[in-house]
Length: 236
Image (cartoon, rainbow, N blue to C red; front, side):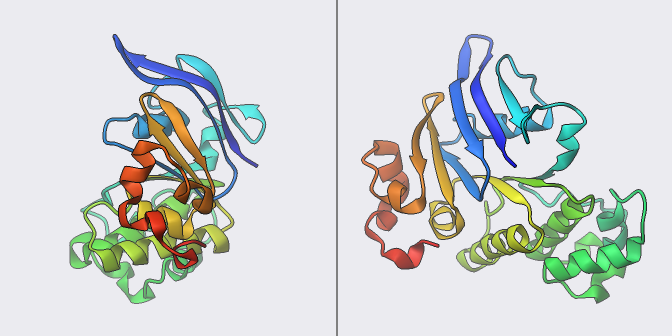
């Protein structure tokens, strides 16, 4: 099971954003790069928010379609919860059939939240708890793939570690494959199986965390910073 980008090229007017992009997402994958490099465009191609201009994307061996996109769940940078709904209704929003109460309680367990919060409103929760609820809501329809757009932006180091640990936990316990768009090299080195760097419209580096740490690419080196010589303790 995988999402495969084959020869994807995208331009907005005269501005080239992606050029002949080729990669596969079949395990915990992080896509890193500078702001404006086109990382979020890759997610929007998968979700159908930006049409594919050139190349193709396949999901589980078939060309991406509106039907197959239902296998993907998007977790946005902000929690984006419905302010007028309590936590139960937020999580249950995407559920059409089945025992909603049982499913909501199961999801709260997956994201390590106490069931007692179901009657609370989003503004009653901390930002970190809201992020967890947003992940639970995205998991509700049983997606096969989770797409994260900058999940740790704006969080302190402790909250960042908690969210990255949660992503890894959800991937393992819910058996979903994750594509994480991020600037967070520390989290990538710690939980990713595969890391990609996007620069100048192309994938300029690709590999497991150990391979990335040995890269001589200037952008990769700039991102690595103090992690460039870190030990295996930073690596899964």
